[in-house]
Amino acid sequence: MDPLPIIRAYRPADRAAVADVCVSTADEGGDSRARYPDEELMPTLFAAPYCHLEPGLAFVLDDGSGRAVGYVVGTGDTAEFVTRFRDTWIPRVAGRYPAPTAPPRSPSEEMVGLLHRPERMLLPELADFPAHLHIDLLPEFQRRGHGRALMNTFLTALRDRGVPAVHLGMVTANKAARAFYDRLGFHELPVEDPGPLTYLGRSTMADEPARADRPVATAARRTVPGAGGSVRP
Image 1 (cartoon, rainbow, N blue to C red):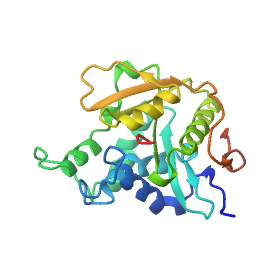
Image 2: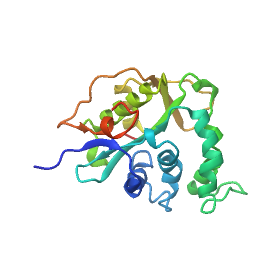
Image 3: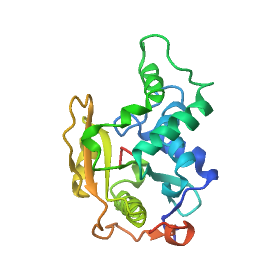
Image 4: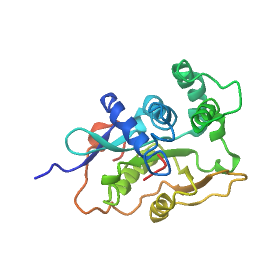
């Protein structure tokens, strides 16, 4: 019998696997290597800083062999996270990705510009939704209930911390992601001039149990002190 996937706390040994999941889903849900050839770039923005700065809110889907094939990461306090991102994370990665001195000429240069503007995460329309997240799964583990289970684990961890609501920003063109979030009770949050993104939010109140074709065990409650149980599902 094949081992069952489980949800567990992120471990430093998962770094490369989490980065691979990020790269494999970072172009509107598809592989981003053609668009962003530097395979460290997208994880440096959307996965690694959360694992480093907020490890207590980083969870992975383990395929049963120890390999991370999906993850959910985020923060319970976006404003505080932005401060730590600027003060702690940017100095760690600025040697590889220095601040731009000219307008971007490629998608990769646009992403480097975003890296150096963490304050972009602070939008007044999202003040009532202080947490935010990123969730990603390898394609072969999608549509099997694992995304819902990861999300419920993250929401439970936020609820245990007393965080009332969470938001996310997703590429509007990613229709499959929008359908996923709609099923999980997210609703659109009006943001002035959102660019290519749609912002969604929901409370952290308990959701229905995860549905899956086969059971998903959850190891997070026993492995993460204080835990209860990204934007491309």
